[in-house]
Image (cartoon, rainbow, N blue to C red; front, side, top):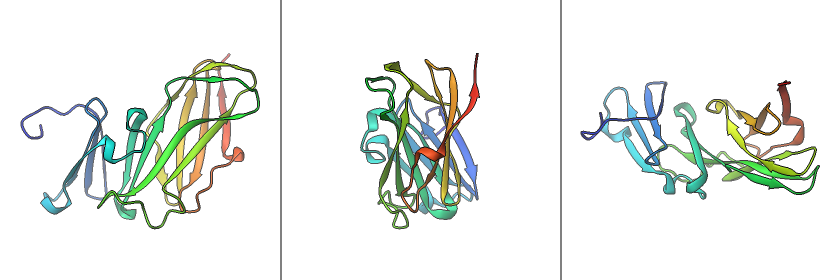
Length: 172
């Protein structure tokens, strides 16, 4: 319960900081496990993302004072095979202030996916992205192909490349 209402969402704890992303209400709650009121924050999705209507999940790394907001299009039409289409948009902010993270080469990065043939496609995250130092790892599913893919993003250098997109499981 928070402010007299039940919470429903994805919650995580790392390094003494608890957070809950409540997608239904578009709200991110951050609490210090030591009940330090100065570190407790509540933010609405429109303040976390340039595409709040597509905001899918939020991941925090308290050690780096980092919030990663992940937006994902529900559905898109691939017209040209071999052309890269935006599947993910990642935004990097300071957890303490929501300002752009000063260690990041850019405030946001697009992750693109290429398809073998034209058609209607949708992508879904499989798990929450993982922050591993300078890298963010995103596992996602492409519905029509029934394949799982992983994107590895270097958020400090601002790099996303085709070589970091791998087919990890082909369902037949």
